[in-house]
Each structure stands twice: as C-alpha cells, then as structure tokens.
Image (cartoon, rainbow, N blue to C red):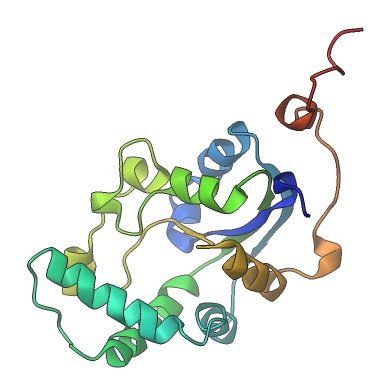
Length: 201
C-alpha cells in the first residue's frame, strides 16, 4: 500500500494571486503545515490547456452545473439558468478568460493527506463564505453575487485538486514526469519517523 506521505496534489496560483503579490504567502501556508513542494513552474496557460483541465472528468460539466444551481437555491437566490449543462458552458468560458489573463504558478505538493490538507488551508470556493484563517477567507473579498453581476468568474486566488483521483489526473496534465523532483526533507523525520529515533545522538 502506498504510504500517506507520498500523496500529491495540484495547486495553481491564479492570475489574481500573482498580481496581488501573494505567491510567497500562499506557498508559506502549505509549507509550514509540513507539505513538500515537488513541482513548480510559472506559465501563461493556453485556452486549450485550461478547458482540458476543467473537463478531465467527463462528469465535471453536469456535477458543477448541479452544484452551482444548488448553491444559488441554498442562498435563496433564483439561479440565472436551470439547465446544469448550460450553466457550466457559461462558467467554463468565464474560467478560460480568467485563467489565461496572466501568468499562473503551477505546483505539486506532497505529504500525508495532501489533497484534504491543501483544501482545508485554501478554504471554500467562494471567498465571501470561506472561513477566517483560510487563504481565500483572509485575502479575498469576492462573492458569487458580485462575480455574477459582473459576468465573470469568481476570483479566489487558487485552484486545488478536489480529490486524490482528481489530483492523479490533473498533475500529469500540467507536469511531465521529469518536472517533479523526488527528494527528502529533514523535517520528514519528525513528521513520519515512527519512533523518532533519529533525533538524539
């Protein structure tokens, strides 16, 4: 069985995160919890790369559309469209515009429960309702209502894989095998050594 410490996840710092000078702060938050950065590159993605990223899961369009409609209704707001696929078509167009508007920083993080830990630190998709202490809760004041009114994608600084299965599809979409580095951190002895017997001389 693969050890939890080898779990990996994809994180993209979106154009707004870079333009606001938050790269260092975002990286610091993942790093200080004990995750290891094993892949890193800055790039301006093509529309094709972004569209493929969001549709790696063939069910993404339906699931995202249904979640979006439910989110509106949970807030007592009438969804602008009732068809999940039509909502997602519009959403994807906005996402492509947003994600190709400037450089992004693509990263692969590794460590125990990497996917869930990164999601917890990042916060919920909508900054307005993200908890204080999360990246989105602390650094963004955007909301679905505002982004819908402006006919744009919600600006939330970061994309993070939603599940291990999703990460396993997203990482090779963004990184070649030779762009991911295998190495040891001294801190891993404290995080993962069963008996902590490597501390005392």
